[in-house]
Length: 423
Image 1 (cartoon, rainbow, N blue to C red):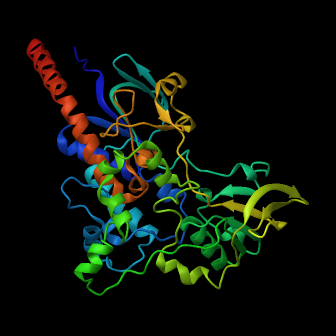
Image 2 (cartoon, rainbow, N blue to C red):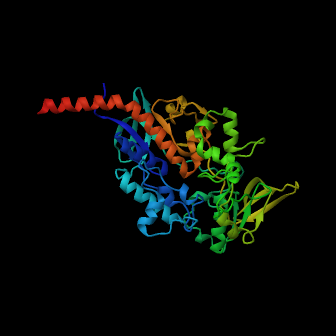
């Protein structure tokens, strides 16, 4: 028998994926509570002066009505929508407007503990409240997924950091900084450091840097559109497949999916590290780039960081700097979520510490759903981008709505009986 104290859905995280799922659940009439600071990482951790890598048409949250888009926000605010790239400030103001209109009930409190019980979950909040929920959606985004190579582990915290912790890079002015990585975060961090007058070098393991193509304003022929179809993630057959067929990706062999998402010796990752087309001129010719350098380790010497590297020619050397920034991306690991109970993690089926999910994003533990980067091994690299919100929100909402329909009827009957008895 359903209990009036049971919450149908608890959403952990109030970033793009959490807000998108909440907006869909609200439109479907499914009761829920959502916990977290709205768009916290975007507002508090991403660097001042940053621009979005994604194009305008691929930078909206998932609204079930389709009305609350970035384009509509810019039109209402009197801002140019067609101008690329999109400033971080514009996007965060849009996302907060989305939240205030569609998910105003966000509770700015952290979930401190999540435990499994026989018919649902127990959650404990930072303010001391305990709640019970039938379903839980994990939408923590990139939080707790920052990846720093083991080779840098010997450096003390004051000499090395992940790119995600730097909101303001201006305090590196006049200092020697080495940025490690070849993706958008590494390239933009290096550009911003250079523009704030830091002495920055970029250390890249590969022999080259990839750059996204400049969008063409000219109409494309049928042959061009067939050979390299457009998608929210860019042009190309593989890119189109990732953007438009996450369910087909899901049914690929597991090893193939893993290799396509993270890369391997046999295959480069789909949508791997690359810089936005508009960033190229701010990096090339302005920032020293060391290509083909493998990091062997790092030590502290004379109060500075020293990185030991080996080039493709087999020659090793040491590079010294005042600080090392690892712009080495993110890797979701289930046990890195500090609020999840150890017994729950033991029962969670994973492949290489990433949850195995159903076609509805539900894990092996009934009622527990994962979104964003945590679902990329299952549904492809689309889930690392904003444009993955739509598919995710629709699938999770449909799954929970279908399951909640009988319980909502039971809940309504209980409420009706309670009202009758007290009238």
